[in-house]
Amino acid sequence: MGRIGSLTLGIITAIGGFVDMGELVTCSQAGAQYHFALLWTVVVGVLGIMVYAEMAGRVAITSGRTLIDVIRERLGWRIASISMVVATLVNVLTIVIEISGMALVLQIVTGISYLWWLPVTALLIAGILWFSSFKLIENGASLLGLGILIFVVAAVKMNPPWSEVGRQLIIPSIPGGTGLSAYAFSAVSLIGAFMTPYEIYFYSSGAIEEEWTGKDFVTNRMTTIIGFTFGSLIVISMMVVAAQTFFLHGLKSASFGSIPVPVVSALGIGGLAVFAFGAFADTGGAALEASLSTGYSIAQFFGWDWGQEHNPRQAPAFVFTYLVAILVAVIIGLTGVDPIQLTIYTTALAAFSLPFTFIPLLIVANDEVYMGDMRNGFLANISSGFFLIILTIVTIATIPLFILSGGGGG
Amino acid sequence: MNLFRDVMDKELDDCDGDKMGKVDDILLELRPDGAAVVRAIVMGPGSLSPMLPSFLARLGRWIEERLLGSAADQPIEIPWEKVMSIDVVVKVDVDRHQVGATHTEEALWDRFISPLPWSRR
Image (tube, rainbow over all chains, first blue to last red; front, side, top):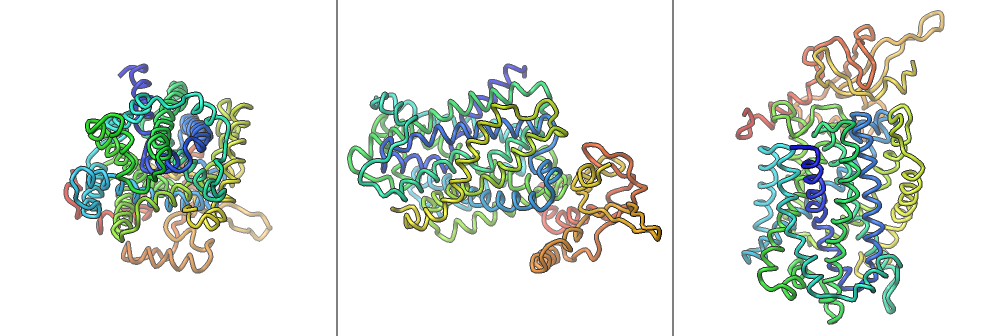
């Protein structure tokens, strides 16, 4: 495939892979509960993930090393172990919610409880990882996940007040009569949904798996900027259609089954079929990426052989790690923990954990020895510093907000 | 050379260029004249344990024994003379299998991964 072809594919997969269980749940609930008042979090979250994903890709291309490798090499094993442990915790919870998301889609389609489907979806994820190449995993799920663009079609069909949507994207507002702590906790969960640690570890390791070189700086930048920008249109649409369907009629979006209701009301049963296909592929893709990210970060910390291009004999510890992560995830899921509540908590925890990954990444991206001419410039440092300040505030505020809002319930 | 910046925590590759772990520590020898000389690179299971809080070290050893069947008594020491090059990775003139650097990966393969279907494809 030529360079333009691979760039196009990278952008398309970035769009298709942008949505996962975190976005499906938090955007639907945010639109239903706060109308357009949390749209501004999309701008913060998407710009933030754009800046840091680009940085992780640039570090990988320049140094030929993954994120955990460079964090350990430049900042020592103690700091690297904190990043690795925190990321692993969030990754495992992410696997729980993503395989639950797949199972919930199957519940909608078949009427059989998602708990019966949970072991099936976990086995499917393990099987795909066991047999598939990196490229197939990265591109396959994301291309199939483009079905989730159905939310954009539904939003256009509903024709909401676009000027108001545009205004609320830029200017944060708090609707009257709303508990501030619950509103703030929802904002934290949304930011955590848009900026999940597994995405950064997957992106960094993916650059090495795909053997990116200096010629791929443009691919890296274009994929993050264009792919994530278009990806943000999907999540904006998800929030807008939920706002128009639920909020305006005084309804709540409390279950997974209510997420596609706006699509069905705008586009009929055909819309539901496309939603189910896209949501299954998107949550499946995220489960694959979160599982791999668990294997990547642990294997890279200890210096084991790793990579999806290796067969199990060549990288047994890497394979063992992601299989155990999936096993632990399915056990947690089978306890009957509410997957919707767990998604809210996981995305909030993801937001809480981000500085443990982003601060070391920012330090390494400024390291002249490692990065040479490709180290962060003024603009990259200003923008990443700005988002880091926001994320640090989020990290400090997450736990008090969780308590004050009664677990996000208000 | 700055040992901490240029050697510590870097990837360690064996004589065939295969990954064998990380440089977990560096062993120095204090000579009678007061000069310190680098004796060895310390790596492998058990090398980080002495630097962990005791409860974490015990937990790590417990997990290692349960998973691998046995825990490494001593970390692996690779004589400094075996260092071939220091660059993005540290390359040493030893075979990773012979020095026991692949103990964890081999044990996980034997006990958990090889019994799975299609593992030897």
